[in-house]
Image (cartoon, rainbow, N blue to C red; front, side):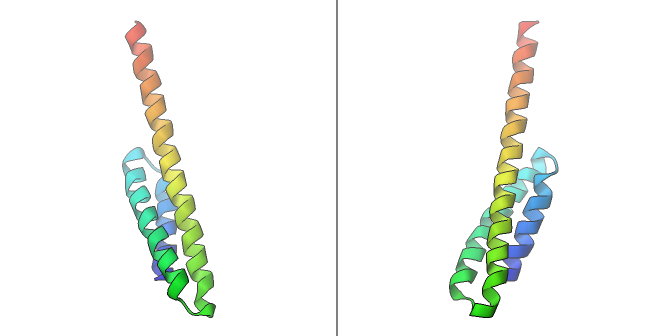
Length: 87
């Protein structure tokens, strides 16, 4: 499960640099990666805990990145709508 968490974290990071549509998918994959990374870290033998930790960290970074992208785009669109209302 640690490898799956790592893959989901990497995909989440990549999708965090794309459009807002893909950011939601990356956010969901990041949350799934966090859950799998946490479970894997608890149940993994000592030699596999590094992969589980890397998957957990990548998933957290990807989730935060996707969330920040979505918030930034929402604020930008809100500001754009506010400017058009003035004219």
